Image (cartoon, rainbow, N blue to C red):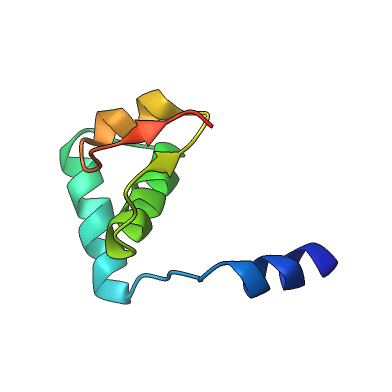
Length: 75
């Protein structure tokens, strides 16, 4: 709980609406994305909604496959 509390103090939580969830999953599905990579699509949608300039991840290839973010880098 301490970790969560500190995270909430320092970051902004970004959530998707029901329609945004649907659109993200539909778009990913149209690109042939299945399984757990759908979660990456949802994270990418949150990054887009937050207007993030860079998404940092250890799974760069997964996010590049989605083709929705300009900059995806390894931390």
